Length: 532
Image 1 (cartoon, rainbow, N blue to C red):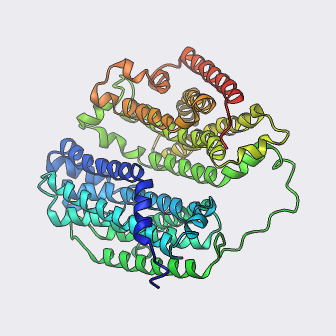
Image 2: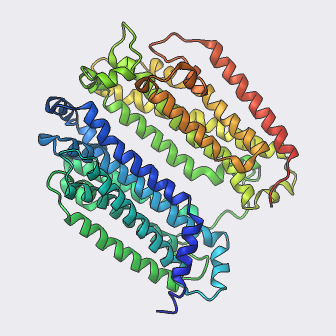
Image 3: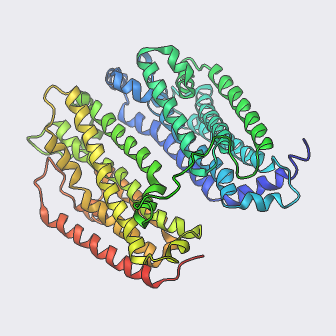
């Protein structure tokens, strides 16, 4: 056994060095948003009467399905934070663990790094256990920072035990999904399969919990995310679900180690489905191949965008009572006379949905450089495929991808809103309010094309621009940013339907800019050296 674990410590230090930026960014991001929420809640709901009002809104079954049950009878700032944020933050922590474990296990194996590592005097199980060790340490640090950070805020209803439980829940969730991903890294033959199966477990756990929380408590106990809400942080402070979660995590670690010990390198236990003897004519072209490579992710995002639209739409029936008297939220709205508060809230929803809908098409575009880094592009360019045709395939997929994503989000919003509102919006109003952001999305895709064409190593910088757009446009009203700050983003020029009139000039101008950016990006891609 000792030989199988040889040099685990050295590999752990190597993993930490490789992720010396990635892991801190995850920790800072999760901790920042965890700590800022109770501060915001304390400002938004200073009195017990304010909190009782929002507690009545949260009694909606749709909200229970989304964030889980809470202590609504004693809705303190602590109980409110745990109710509205703990489950969603736990999902983010789960995603962090899934991505990090996949990166250092099956992805490294797929890229041949594990073979190189095993040629050195290291144990057979060393890499897997080094990965799990780093993830456990990462989640322990997250638990401690979050727990003590929440207590340090000095909010009366957030005592030390509740704060530590809140942090430990997040850490335990991360450890649990590290175990889930380590197991699927042995079962699946690819990093894509490992991530896909692990994310599927996360989604199923969320849906099972949602159904259980609304109608059958027994179902909630089947789901690991149901254990998260059963801890009831800042209320009863139930620690037993943590013991359960860590116990199952240890079993998953042991199973992953056993399977890793008995399987061959680059093999998996899930039988690979035999492909066709001859590829279809569609798959033989660059567009078909690119689409096949991204199919799973696109379907997952499409489902996610539709569900997000439904989630937003399901609360539209209660928005009037929610906003009434809430000065901070009213400050974020358009304040247009002649429109209800719900109508004024639609532009804000559309900005969020448009920015989230921008993520999958940019990912689809950046996949071109991702394939180049893995030296796969040269195999395509070595055949009768021009660079223009290759990049055009990814651009076409991204453009269609963005259209589908924002359409599904709008359809979900309209359908759920029509179901919960007495006099719902017509489809054209909602769909038009969403689709008007499509030209801004095209500009972001155009920027991604431009960067890949000239400075491919800086492809990640597009995410900073998306994040900037989110901050200045979503929170611009609250922080009273000047107009020019918002207009540094293409989304800042979009007319905010339905409370503003339609303006075609900025929409046409953004479309032209997007086309120009793409053309220049194509020119750069044709001239620059391909890596590999």
